[in-house]
Image: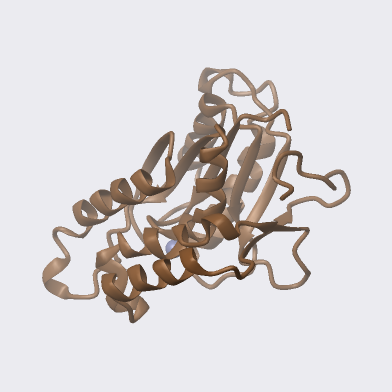
Length: 228
Ligand SMILES: [Zn+2]
């Protein structure tokens, strides 16, 4: 129970909301929640006339979601959407973020995905989590090794290692998705629908879980403080 800070990597604004209930639960318990989004979400416009304003729209939507989650700080690397590149500069930026935040736990995308930015976020963050702990490139910050690395989505070939009961925070899922108004066409939903869903979840006794996979099961078998 002795960790105090988590860092959640996402490729686009809203990817991280897959674990919004967990983030809100930890924030309520006093854990510092840092979110780092790799791209600016510039391709997420469902209508052509939104093209020029989508980045600004999504920045505001992220800020609205953070109010609900209780995010400590959101870091936007700002790579061009659909063009996140696993090059040296981007890799070093991920290391810089990890060394500045100094998280006990890092969450990121898993390996089984279709979207190029998701796959690159997975690859870059996985390697950066390891390399950040080595005494190299120390101009990027003092080396810092997070103790755990988890995937919060896109793992298809095995059962989750952690099934976390987030029932009391389940409504945070639809409530944060309701803030992502620019994406509702893509998701075939609306603010009204999502807020109604949140209300139903708040009133329900049903068990709701978030699931996580260890990046390396050989030396990670227990996540202190995330149990129940
Ligand atoms: Zn995405």
